[in-house]
Image (cartoon, rainbow, N blue to C red; front, side, top):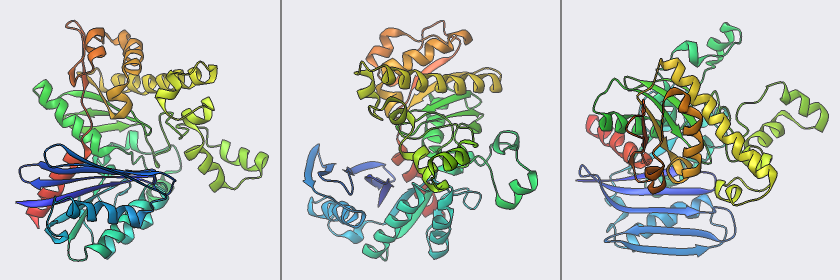
Length: 392
């Protein structure tokens, strides 16, 4: 038996799960929300349904990691910190350097930092948590699981941009994607539910960050996110697809730097920028504001455009898979997306959609299955780490 801690770190939150392997038993499941903000919230589930909750102001990265580890010990989940046999960290951008799970040493950590230009919101924070945990648990092996690894097989026809080919090769410019850990997980689960591995799938990871991917025979052939996670769908605060000429346009008209324009596209655009109300779908759906409605319509529109193009690219589809916070919990979004896709013969069962239980939500005469599969990135990650530990 081994205990593996899975860490999913973001700029404003830290999620973690402690597993006992190989049974895949979850010993503790926690998160720290509102990091570096007043009223930081710590929540941990452990034992036989017991819960721990605490509010503390302005918890920073160092403190959040200490809270995570110390509470695992103080709550009796583990006896000593060295009972943790390995730590697995989600890392967004691995470029072409990492195409599978990597055991973290100084060289790997340097690469994760260097690849921050591809995922500037994610990689620096993930690298910082790796360093913090290394200081607290210096003898514990850490592993990185890369979101980009699932997209390594995307063919060049979809992976590269229409720029001079020599620059593509010189600077390794390509569509790297994001949410690959979950797209890979729900692809595998969809194959299990359908009963065959040759399925043509369109997977929708819809949340504050959102992406669409197309899979055939278990491998990804296309994805909406690009060189950075800013590309693709209109998201909570990210613009999604924009004309690159807008960068110099805003630099000239606003007197902004390129970095400031990109920050605007990443942090002040998307649903928040369009609506002026919120980046949260729940707030927008309860609002009477016309711009809030416009933001919702654009979110559905962009999702449908990518899904429909992927169905065409695949030459048909066996299942549409909804996952992620919005995909799993927002029945209105599922209804609107599926209504637009009815041209392909895809039909949603309204009663099943209303219940929104995991599984098949399609009618019996639908040409493709509509599957609701909850994201479980931590389970996918711990399986990868366990495989790598056994291979060491």
